[in-house]
Image 1 (cartoon, rainbow, N blue to C red):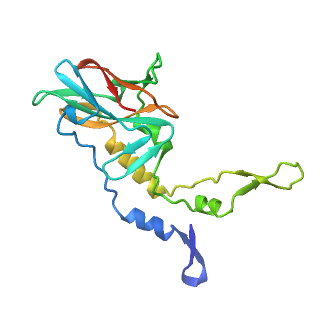
Image 2 (tube, rainbow, N blue to C red):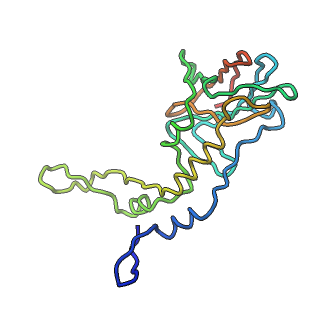
Image 3 (cartoon, rainbow, N blue to C red):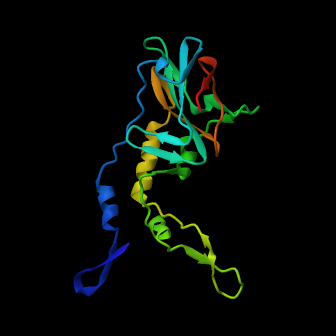
Length: 217
């Protein structure tokens, strides 16, 4: 918030100018279009008369407008193809991901649960800039109110509300659409996982049948 001087010399408070600018600018959020065909993805497999295709993006969140990131999830771009005018009920819940050969595959989660961990790597937080310039937060370790200059806490990054809204809208639009749709359709699905991935298999078990496809980590 910033203070201004209104009538009568009294301070008035409102949004920062940069936040107003972001609010005023419409967010260009678009769904992910299907690629030309299943062969344009890393892998694909048949489930009845439907082809499930997939591309593994690790911790990147590739929306059509900007590439975001998440440390807590890995992301798969899915394309679903079928005969002309084929309609199919789609859901993230029909997918799971076998990571690093684990016996129990990770279940996909709703995009709404992912939002809290999604970041825009192009956002330069003022807190991080201050920390890099030597303005880190010292913590007391001697019990007497003194500070230990060798111990610092990471800065708390405050994301502007307009940026949070823009990120949420972009992830929502990029996520695999729910309910019944005419094929082809495409979108992102999210699986909880931190760290590296050595091998990955996408598993589909839904109204079209079952399919398993190996993807490239």
